Length: 229
Ligand SMILES: Nc1ncnc2c1ncn2[C@@H]1O[C@H](COP(=O)(O)OP(=O)(O)O)[C@@H](O)[C@H]1O
Ligand SMILES: [Mg+2]
View 1 (cartoon, rainbow, N blue to C red):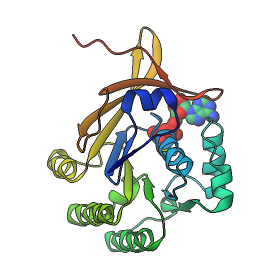
View 2: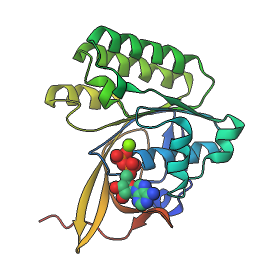
View 3: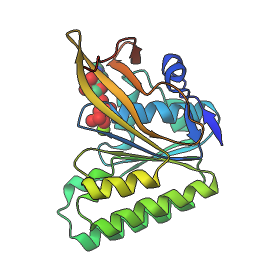
View 4: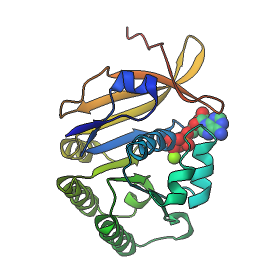
């Protein structure tokens, strides 16, 4: 296993990087920065000359690249070179039946399993997950996890309450790293707090990092933390 730097110096100093290969979940409500954080991880892999496929349920391919460039995560070159592939899954258009959603998950699995990439990002899993049975969702994550044995890092973003209490316990046991991002207010500043809830495989660093997303500076670590009383 290696550690892939995200390319964001301050963030790398704090979390040390992303273990590769691994299976990672990034959880957080809408607007906390899951997509930007996932984009930053993609940036790190691409900087290391690796390939990334980014499955998005939120944007069209070019829109995602433009959005990320807007927060200083510039993947344009890698996108044009084909090392950064974006797969838009427009789930909002359909009112699905569970069967169709399960079919989509298995097609997705087939696709990401067959494509020559080092990292697979699914942003987000939540909408797709909401249509399928718990068993199918667990199978999907388990199957993705197997790609780790083929040297791939899988990153899934989710927003609560995708996993209920019992599902969460099972999902946590299946992943190597579990990040939770929350919107917080520290000293009157609205920031995001990135917390590493689960961490295995020699992944060292601090467990809570505060950051801000600024159009001019991108994802910026802020040296402030929440005091726990
Ligand atoms: N172009 C932008 N200008 C300013 N802030 C932005 C911009 N894009 C994103 N942000 C910041 O990033 C946050 C959204 O990040 P995003 O990764 O889309 O969240 P999520 O995927 O968790 O819904 C916003 O709350 C905002 O703070
Ligand atoms: Mg998002």
